[in-house]
Image (cartoon, rainbow, N blue to C red; front, side, top):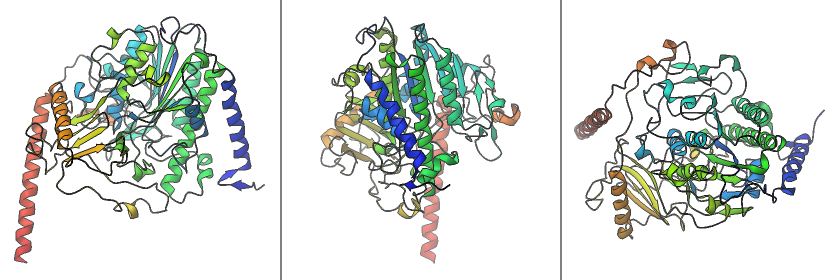
Length: 568
């Protein structure tokens, strides 16, 4: 029997949403009555249960309260009843964001300032870093991780269960098929990538990963006694990273979207929305909700080529423009002092480490040396953020800008180096920040290819940009020439941070990591007793030598082309 449709939703869908809205409203009857046994200023007595949900590649414009074409009623409701973080920053790609969340430290202090950890690299989160779940374990928490790790796995010592999590179910690499869990790192370099604890979980093949991860979280909540021990769950969704895969029932409501990639992408976001609904329902059902804190965060900006959108921000995933580093984020909790508001407090992903350790009852000695700040009072009570400055990154290995130089950096900083920093209202970028256009939402069928060159505003020959991102959040007005005084001050800050940087950890790929040499699955291939044989400084020097040689060849190639053109 045919059903009447309205803007892509069937009558059954609308009834479902009505029920959902009613179900989400019910907790509001009691949410203003925090558990009297919990003292927010001194949470040692009964620490809160912490649920941290991270999505992968969800853009700034890919949530209902920012977007007109993606429907996320659950996330919208949770954010509206909590605190929306509208001045919140993450990293432009996967590994850096996760490493900063887990360690509370900038990439320059962990050696992960260049790119991501690739599946065949003998590299992982440095062993000298005490992780957030390890700190929470020390404070009496039961800790669990579900989903994407992407922090290295060449040794067993790198695995989540060795870095502070009591249990783990998820993928170790950066992406995989949502149903078969196959992950590829190039042609004919594919392997199975679903692990439970420290074993390959072959038997789970075939279930949509978003659903599987949600079920796992619900089982953890059902099996644990909320009154006996505080709980920390890090749910790191694979969604909405490519490949664009989703059950058909989530795609039907978006049939009006002509762009196929955007349609599937929106459906994947809706599946995450439903997953969060099921998790929050479980928090209430099993007695966690009154003493819980739910944090929602994306890991980086969206990828427009794959259906994502950061509009109206500039840039995309993998860049240091606002579209790459301005994150979606909100906090929902009955323990918030001031709810239902938008926070403009400056918050960075490294801040969750000291904030959560503080909420768990830890003192400042447990977060000594981290780069994050405890921002709970800024979030919960609306006080001023203790954070004034964010080092987005300094990457000495990224392709150097051809037009950059020490001279353009006032003799104190080589502007060929990719770097970015924010201090107060000001944001500085040097080197090559990455693709810097403003990309409209992908609505038309052939988008974005037909629109890719609409707004190209990067002037050739530039290697320094300065923006007042408070007054110009879309980065349309470069003030580097008008305010050289501010440029110089921020360059000096880059120099300061660079003096504290550790060598880049980016070793060559190891052929022994091939899944076909390890039973067909990705996993540790080096024994824990084996010592790393590479030299980071040597690797960096070798990379720079190759880059110099490549540039020389490019110069000769252009020169030769010019000579041939003159002859013709």
